Image 1 (cartoon, helix red, strand yellow):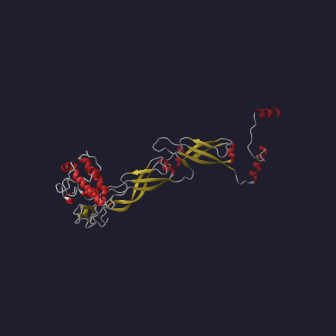
Image 2 (tube, helix red, strand yellow):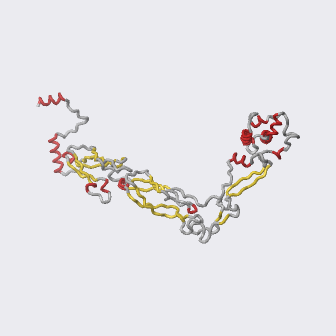
Image 3 (cartoon, helix red, strand yellow):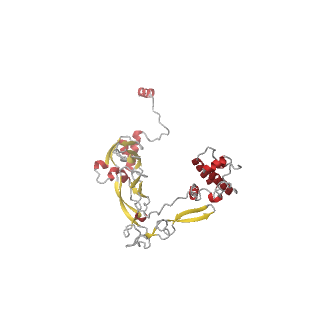
Length: 390
């Protein structure tokens, strides 16, 4: 025999029936004339089918192994009419081969008009106090809701969807193309009903058959204490109602905390500045510093104000920490701290009497000259020498 059927299929002489079948399918997907771009693709495909037809049949295979010609007059002799996989009892459906090559799916049936709605993302602005202590705040959302007139059916009152006459409820149509290799069937969504299997002859005038309408509704959003910009609140089933009155998607509320006039937030800590008169910084004093709690509804004086001591000689830029007066930590019972930075203010406008008093103070302190550079503190022996020199 001039043709080596085992070599054509790429199997050994001891290959079983299942191995031969798998090898044939794998090879057929490569050399089929509709796929391969070579000029001899049709001839290769013909030889492949001939090899498979012989080796899959135990009697023909035995004759071939003995050196006989199973495709000759005493053998099969059926030509293309007996090729496997095109209606023959022992082969496989050609449409399965095409489907495996091009991803063609089998019939899926009509798709439902009722589908879940999309998720939505909206923003919400908060004051620093609202973010720190929590708040329940109204939020307006432009969204799709269930049509109250048709209750999501999409049909006018007294009507209902009817079976599509084009696809007879299948939701898809099938086209058959004949070729010398057999019938090739392809399926696509029905153009008349768009794959639903039903049509709405009399749509609801309120929603035009969608089963939902757009409107603006108000939600009360509960914001927990300690949130910050970028945090999101997840509201299940508060998004858009789906087509056909389907279940609503989820709503995500992204928070943005507005800047505060007196406080700067750093995580769960707060920073504020207290302006101190020059004389108060020199002599020392105490001051009541407002806290963020002062902006809470019903806050007591003890919560709203904290007593802060300013030691005598306090310099501008001095910072102290007030424990536990910062922002409550998210999902925690603890709070951050409040940093207070003192800014010593030098008077810019003086009347003659004030100017004279400052001159007298300068005379007493010997502060008429401004020293440039860093003053170096005297060491132990320098201080001892000064003491003896009087």
